[in-house]
Length: 480
Image 1 (cartoon, helix red, strand yellow):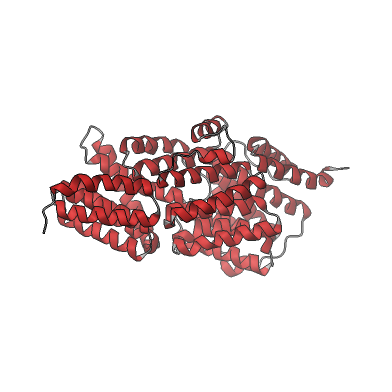
Image 2: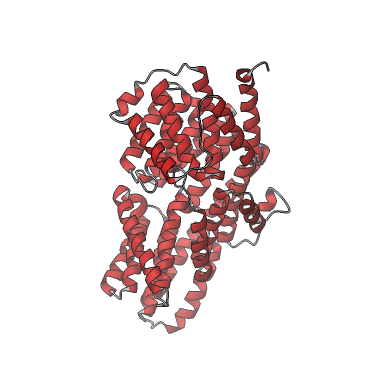
């Protein structure tokens, strides 16, 4: 290669190979260096002032522009800016995993370049990622984020850029539309995007969409685990074939979650690496500052512990997870659900009336406030969990009438909205409350309903635990 411009294609291919192999730190440094030579200065350290300035700049560039204005932007022609968009696009993935605080700044730069120099195929992805940032903490601009998702889809169609569907759908349906549309409506889009990615050669985002599908299927939709377990094995083999190391680890964590809930004592990581386990994966991720992997494992462990009734472990994971909080653009369904689990854990321990009761109560109350806002945005996805949080809070405050009404409302909403797994959880929590009130017959009926829901979910580990409760409670019940 004679000059820097001649080397760009070589650099691009090299970066893609580094991403696939999981060498994120080296890869991100290379992208930042290349972007500097292309005239884009990306900060290596992000202070509050730098972040605030970057937010102000992107908002200024978008000021006064509506959906139609963005779709009427000219086509990007500047070769250096097109190249910058390509390496910023690589940096998006890298920063999400390795340096989350940098992720929004990369998004902002892509948006600013698109507005100042015209749009290209990757501009659609940039607008979608900006929408992902808008719906996230602390902005929570769900309407604005949803609009940017619509802009992104419209721009993709206008440019006939179907090859970016895997990238675009990962953000629009994995991070944005989940705040407005039923989880179930978003789920199938990830399979569609994965198939497009495989046919166009975008194996990174083909695999990403498979990970997003499994994530939403477990945490959001409560898909039958028996069928999902078979699908995951197929997806794992696809990821291994494509050598997508970091995504293989993501899928392994989700596979381990599935096996744990099904009651199988198997090591999911052995499919990828015989010497790896969840423990060694976490240790390696912590050592190499792979925040996204650490976060996903904490969320997984907390989820399993909570559903299995191991509340001390759940509380430990609740606190550990805070060390890996996400500062990047967007929240996965697992992270959203994790907030709900935090609230449930908090209200459980608040009822213990220990020295930390005030701290746990405050967390429970703040979680209810957050979910009240989210339920206004999408009653379908969130109201059943809000009702359950409110029931547990009424339990804490000894408000019997409210507690019963809220448990019933949570059960009904979960059933109506096809969240079978969370219907089972609401039935079980109602049973626990009624048992506390010495209403044994009613408690037994709810435990039996919970068992049916868990059986339908394929969560044999939960079925076994509830069966134990039923066997202990049954002798205490009075025959009608």
